[in-house]
Length: 240
Length: 240
Image 1 (cartoon, rainbow over the protein chains, first blue to last red):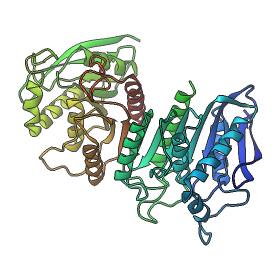
Image 2: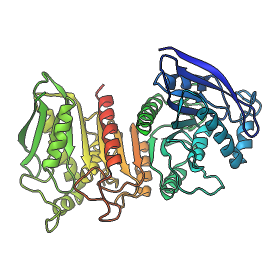
Image 3: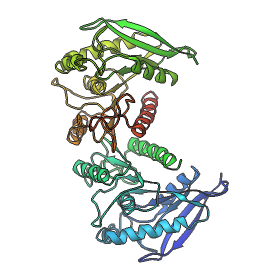
Image 4: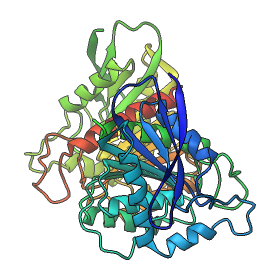
């Protein structure tokens, strides 16, 4: 096994965009492709490492960029959410950028075009739910500590399978919003599951967010491990 | 591997009780023990088959009896819920019978006394939640389409880990009751997870309950498969 990366610059509304593709170059032929949609801060090394973990499972993994080349923030930025807020305010643009990223994934010669999925964290969790809501041609999506408010555009039937990994104490996604999501996904006819974890807040997969800082936020190693195992099993299921 | 059964008659309040133990007699020495708590109908062949599935995983499995020797019903009985209703009306007695069954499991020479767990279906799902609420010495419990109303006795800290496998459309356990359970288990300091499945009703693991009969009830093969896989992984985790 030799996990390899390359930078991929691709077009779309507001682009160009710059993401990173990871794959195992000991694997021959087409294989499933998985998009990773970053959190509020945008494309970064943590996402590329997630791509490498997925590549080690035999997938082509693509850590995408929704903000545009060079547009990233850190927790120390004056406004870490500046790019996220702009996209949150224009869910149709978010949708169109997601479609552009998916088209770039579909365009990779190593990717089987009928076998793609997307996972996302925080704002990226919301984004992959929107990808499913928009009827994108993906087999499945996994949201980790996503946000559940529906987009303003009409959602008809959702064909992608969904796994929603949820921290019960997440103040950005309180139980009421989770229940509303359950009803929404049911109305849309989706094959959906929610895994809810007790004593778990927002960003529970993110080891860079210390637990015990801001209430309802922070890394939770049990929930991180359990949700990753669930996602790995889910991806295997949707690609069979 | 040679999966073997024996009938176990044991004492307790309202007893004697009669359950079935299954184990792999190719395995030597003490191993984890798992109680199976039946649904409304009481101890029956379906529970013994579940015990055999757990025995094949290397556990000593014990399909318990909460009603008393000879007290069982079928779907065709004049009142299939007659024994369940009596126990539902006396949650302290339910608790005491659960403790009696657990003591019987702990008394088996093949069972490691520090490594036990319980799974349950429907009323048995409620029962295993009560077992955890009562502070029983189990490592973990799994509820499949259980009922979530708390018992009238005081629950302090819950030490057992909990996995709650939940059908979103279950009319016996609507979303409000699931949310209340999440808050209850959080207050009790428990390590808890809920797996909620869309388009899934009560009795989703039970192939004898036809889907499309009574609204919100019926076998759902995807949720049956997913919840079993989750339970198998959970048991492996709580016994490590």
